[in-house]
Amino acid sequence: MRRRDFLLTPLLLPALAMARDAVRYAAASRATRLAFPRDHGAHPEFRTEWWYVTGALDLPERDMGFQLTFFRSRPGRAETLDSPIAASQILFAHAAVTRPGAGLLHAERAARANLGAGFSATDCDVHIGAWRMQRSGAGPQQSLHLAVHDAAFAFELLLQPTQALLLQGDGGWSQKGPRPALASHYVSWPQLQVSGSLTLDGRRQAATGRAWFDHEWSSEVLGPGSVGWDWIGINLSDGGALMAFRIRDSTGASVYAHAALRAADGRLTQFGAHDVSFTPLGRWTSPRNGASYPVRMEIRCGPHTIRTAPVHDDQEIATRRPLPISYWEGLVIIEGTLSGRGYLELTGYANSMNL
Figure 1 (cartoon, rainbow, N blue to C red):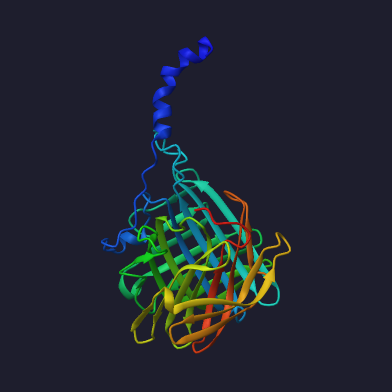
Figure 2: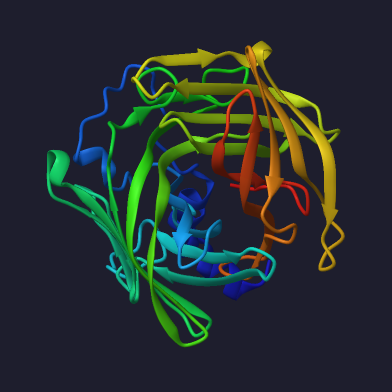
């Protein structure tokens, strides 16, 4: 050992000890009882969190889709730095608009908390620059406001609830694998009435439709051997709502699955792993990375069987911030024993998801 290294070693020992200590993330617990509006807000003690809105528009064009997702990530670094701009909480966002027959436009943003971005821990209020998702009001007067401004497109949308929150799983505790530790807290808000404006090609137009809101937070979702998931959230034509997902391994086999069907009258039926299946019927291959996505899918939930038909095959989102990742996220029309419009999300086909 050189003398300089020897002299520096005592100074480095505290830092080395801290580096060896694993970051302690909170765990999703079945005993947790969610409370609102508090739990619409951020949960920074967890590793990963996202607020996710998808919608199908009737104006300015029938079956036009939009998506806005804010992600919060606690990477486990810089947690001991006494600085408000330490990179201990990272925010990034993806937004997209799908035009039937014309394809998908998407944009992204990323920043660290308190340096161009921020979130509230008491209600849904998250932003990166001028991009924002914010809840306000109470009871039937509450609403979500979305704002996205990009060179390719922009939208300012107001989402108003027509029904109650849907707490997924057991009161908002949603198991994601055979071990109870593989779980998240998961809240959905289907059948949101959409109004506002959408700007494309420099032209601002009125926008109306229906949307779906998801808020999910966790520290452990994918277990060893799992590479991604297939998920769908559907606003049914009769006013009901269906959510279904499966976790996949590298062979394409299901590791875990679950579904929840809420009828228009509010009755909730949940389906366990053995009652849910996803069967590919037709694939689309990405010209960007060669990933093969099963965009036409048959999904079985207990007595119900539905099929997905994308409004456009290429609804792949390929992002660079904060890391390169590609996944398919698109508006689909639903036919079968249930009908409606929803968003299908397919991850882990271009590369394994690493949350």
